Image (cartoon, rainbow, N blue to C red; front, side, top):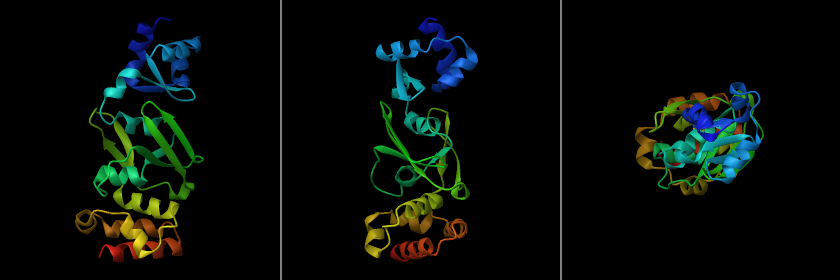
Length: 205
């Protein structure tokens, strides 16, 4: 198969895996993918997952990649904080939550971290539209905070909470504390509840 035929068929998907290719062409020669990556026509995202090189120029496409190369997952933690303007920094790594095992992938689109949570805690996310028209799964601000405090229990003192450098205006005017507490109840964790209480006190909520 020539690359132009392959590109015409697969390019609209943005990124894809080998199973999707074989659904279209069951006799597809996988060596083509290796050769096209070597020539710079494709980017290998992780084992059996690829994207077209041109998508490196598409705004926010890395967030879409984060959802697609390890499923199920949704973007959370620092990446969600940055997306919502909850912290002043731009994050250079993409952090997600998954029910699969903890994992990390590095490729031309970025560094992707996935933190494991139990299935009952896989909630509190929704669809967000990207600049390129695609969509991604993203934690709500409230769930991103809970995911962080749950997965990083060392953050427990008032000083630790201050070091998060959460935006005071966002915390005071945009954070839904009622939703935060509803989500918190689903964790059934007294230790987490104490850390959340401390966080809210530090930010005068």
